[in-house]
Length: 71
Image (tube, rainbow, N blue to C red):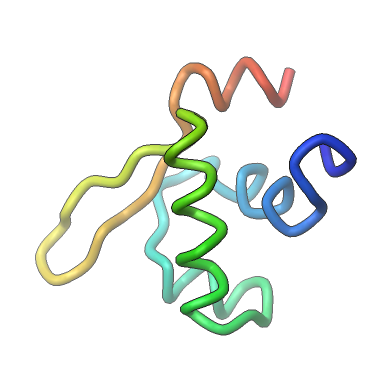
């Protein structure tokens, strides 16, 4: 998967077993929140993740397409 979409995007996609915010993912992967946001935008545009507002943040989760891509 890393070769297809890049190691960072693959790592973020793999990390979404449970919905997570940009800030949470940034901390887990030692990346800037803006960097994570950019990667999540690409994954969202590809249909691999979707975001849902939860209070003051958006939590991202894998879509069925994202799940299938990991298999």
